[in-house]
Image (cartoon, rainbow, N blue to C red; front, side, top):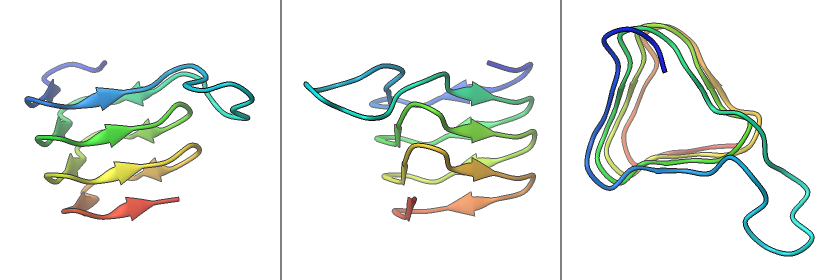
Length: 78
């Protein structure tokens, strides 16, 4: 988790298999000056680069990469 970054209430960060036979998992990387909004789900293998805002209720699935100034509200990134 980078400098000046924060996770709001209700954020779920999954870094390992969450059910039997799950093919995915891995580290979640969070850059500097990142805000992750309420009730966001970050699956394993997600990368949030510097200066990203992830909006309320968004889901970022395995392998998603959010680049600087990416903003999402209630979206799903595969």
